Amino acid sequence: MITNISSNRMGIVSFKSTSHCGVILDGKEYLCQISSCVKLSQSNMNTERRNQVSAGQMENLIVVGDRVNVLVDQRSQPMIVERLPRHNQLSRSSSSRPGGAKIEQLLASNVDQVIAVFTATNPEPKWNLLDRYLTKAEGVELPVWIVITKTDLVDQQHALNELKQHLAVYQKIGYPVLLTSCVQQNGIDELRSMLKQKTLS
Figure 1 (cartoon, rainbow, N blue to C red):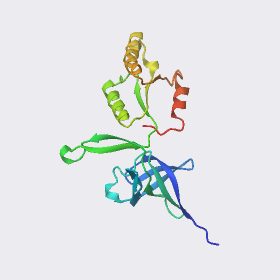
Figure 2: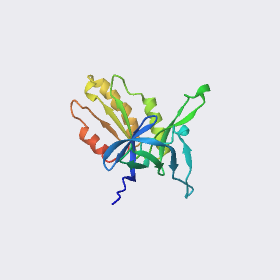
Figure 3: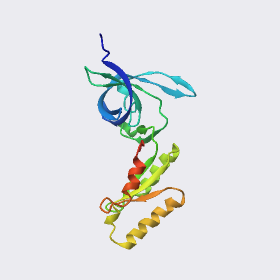
Figure 4: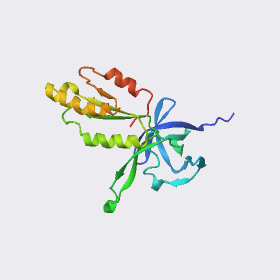
């Protein structure tokens, strides 16, 4: 009897390098190659389009969070052969190209929520950077949590009060805030609950 040793399986991209990706398949992470010709399945105005994209255009082709079909063959390394439709995507502008031209760099797709993580001190939170994160998340209608770590390092009450005053501004406009400390185990259970079964950025 002939046994079929290859099959397509759907998974979620967990990390990406230049030519490989980590993909979660049935609860286990596999290192997968990216096909030189990945099939796209993307919705556009309720009409599905399928295109072939060359490997040279792969910068934004596959990103963390993408749902992909992987060809699993017992004789070789698993290979990503198709990217399924994205529900949303987060990106940033980059000027890494010659001449400083702005290009869009995708960071993640199919995100459930954004968690903006900053340390309480050393270094102090960069509030303007937080504002940029919030703007990006609002642009794709994603819920955001603001998480402050290492609160045990804030050794002066006035510094802690100043931190809470800054955070109160965000809480007032509807953003939830969580203060955490691994040393004191403050907020850790809440953070674990927040991360469970989510695709995050």
